[in-house]
Length: 118
Image 1 (cartoon, rainbow, N blue to C red):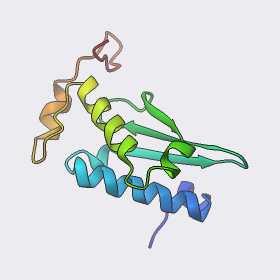
Image 2 (image 1 turned 135 degrees about the horizontal axis):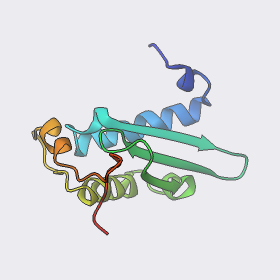
Image 3 (image 1 turned 180 degrees about the vertical axis):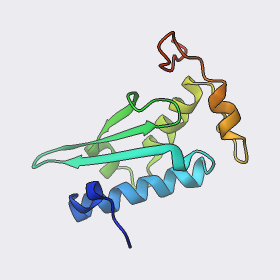
């Protein structure tokens, strides 16, 4: 298995959780999974998970406390918040959709940043 530099520097438990999260996103939103970046950062007492849809923006996504995921073996919060993120930018949560066509329809401001519904 080939790891990125970021993955090689991660704790094994964080890397395993990252892969589990990406697999769960792929299970529910398979056409979008390659556009997601998942970052897992654990600390001594707590940690955080960040999920960003790179097709929309590399700056905005969602962040969730790791303790909320540890107590959720089915990763329901991840699925819920990922669906909310797609919905915010009016991207389909259905399977077998043309992602490129949808991403071209994302509203952007005058400097090209994605704008979502408030």
